[in-house]
Length: 297
Image (cartoon, rainbow, N blue to C red; front, side, top):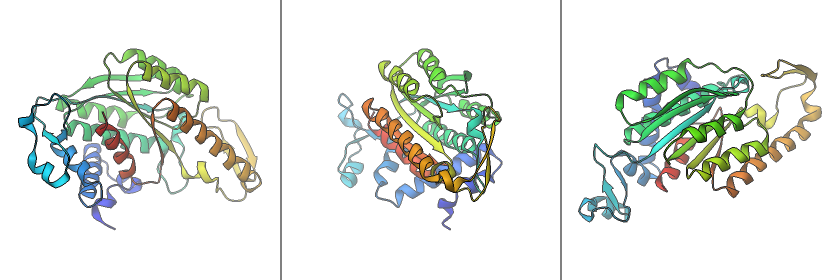
């Protein structure tokens, strides 16, 4: 396996104990991959440039980059903070689920959140963190200081999934606590009432925030391929039910698809960028989705 691709694999990353090393390897593997892909332009913008905006000094345009990409970029400087971003991670008990051979949804959310924070700090963006279950557990306001990144990473590293979810309630509170416009990245399985989630997303949009929503699911939550006889346990209430998965597989898959379609429709109607990430998928697709959204701001 390609070394850079290895460090984008969730199971391989989980074997690395050092949290900062994990995030660095994910981001470096991603950026190296961009250089070899059709998305090479994104890596240029990530490393030392940003897209030209009306009002920028023409003298700051990098004409060498223009000659290669046919797009206008300006050089970034140390004192620039280009974006304020809040990463909101769902730490409810349902996020602890992991099918055989995969990391848990929460582990995936932690590694993705840490990698995003590491990547944004490299772009001199201000990054904050919100961890929530049925209420806000931790709130770290956005900062662009380099010594802030270990605090964000450690907070995620030390959090354990617990309690029932109230994604909508927690996000509504978060929307009121963010003082300045920016980007909100939500990482959750979204196991909550659909209409309530819609209202919470609408709250962020009303406040003028750009929103990127990563829905994290385990692959078995999609295909329901669980074998012959299984005992199902509610992660949040511990209620148990014994059934044969193949007897209800078709109905289950249709219900899941309806659920996902409802989330997608809500996001489309509210101009929220939506991305479904499975806990066995390489991190590069999620990071690319973030970078594409950021380039539009």
